[in-house]
Each structure stands twice: as structure tokens, then as C-alpha cells.
Image (cartoon, rainbow, N blue to C red; front, top):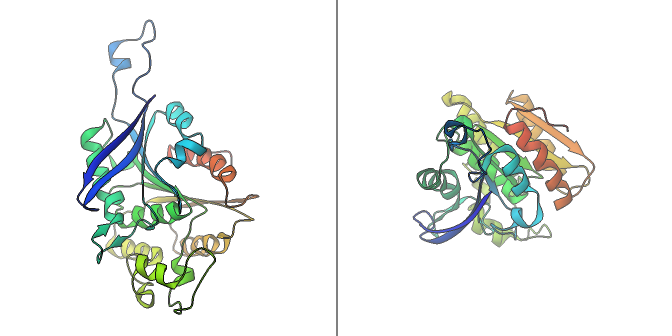
Length: 270
């Protein structure tokens, strides 16, 4: 298992950025194995996003993702989204959405032995990263065939049309307006997952399949259920799981196992 850290200049963010990558390309030669059998084939790839106040090192530090990458022979790319919810800030000139949904995919495909096939390319994340995976998996649906969303912070449901005195225990109106723009214009924008789904349906473009999981004790359960109900009404391909658990690494470490099985077309034990 090759574990690498890459620094490169992002045009979308206008500065040097860092991501971690797991590449199961260095397996030992097995006696009797032919050269063709040992040849590195383009890898299926999961772009995996961290949560609020996290970093590109979280998944490596707190989960079994290295083991899972090696077991399933799938590359995992883990960028940093800081606290910007993986959406574009045009005023600041920091295009976090375009960075993870387009630039990072194109850069890593040029640099690493990754498949360029949409069917082999997935995006996932937890909490803020779950929202980022949904938003950018839908906005850049031509790149991603499957979306993994764990305990997703689908905040447009909570902050759309919020008053200036709004606070939710994590951040306030000024922060949400800085990240998401005019909150009175949020619903129907490209930061609204429902609007992105409807746009794909109207255009006839394929909608990525979605896997959602959320704990029954999670403070974000209500928005996950609301988005689930919307996807069911719109007949969007969805696997949805609720089970005992809170907004913790215990839950995410368990369900990333099932989610990767699902993304690879296996039958996860949910």
C-alpha cells in the first residue's frame, strides 16, 4: 500500500494545497504469477472528504480507510476543504466546489494510475464532507457515478432565509452568509442539492447513485431524512440506512466499510 502526500498549486484556490492519497499499487509478486496478472491496472477511485474543523488527515487517523483501500484495491484521495463546505466562494476567489469536483479529479488522473471511467469514480464524505459529496457529486455528475454521504450536514434546509441573529450552536449568520452567499437565494441555487437533482432530471443527464447513512442519535438526522424523502419522491437511486449511533467516528468508521462495498457493487451488510 503506497501512502503519499501531495502538494500542488490549485488554480481554483489560487494557492498551494495538500491532499493525501492511498494507492494499492505495490503488492508483492506472488510466485507463479504472470507479468500480466501483476501489471497495475487503472484504479477505481474514491474522493473522500472530511468534516467541519477537520483536515485531509482525518480519515487516515480515525478510520480503517487504509485497510479498506488495500482490501478492495481502490485508490482513495483525501483533500482538505477547510471549513468552506466544498462550495465556491466567488467573492474570495476560492472555488472549493470546482476544486474537489473537477480540478482535483483531473489533476490526480494525470498524475496517478487512476481510471478515467465515470463508473469507476466515486465521491464521499462525512458531515460537512457528506454535504460536499452530495453537492459536488451532483454538480459534477459527469465525473462521479456514486455518492457516499455519511451523517451529512445538508444545511440549506436549516439556513435558507435565516435571520441575521441566527445561530445553531456551531456557527452564526455571518459565517453561513460568508460560505453560502445570500441565504435568501440559497434554495434553488447550485448549493441546494434538491435543485441540482432537478436540474439533472430536466437535462436528462445521469444522476449518480447515492448511499446515505445516519445515526438515530445524530443531531443531523432530520435533514438526512428530509433529503431521503425528496430522493424517494423523485425516484433517484438511493440506498439509505439508519441505525443506532451519533455524530462520531465510531459510526463513520463502521459505515464507510459498508459504503465502499456498496460503491463497488457488492452487497453491504447494513
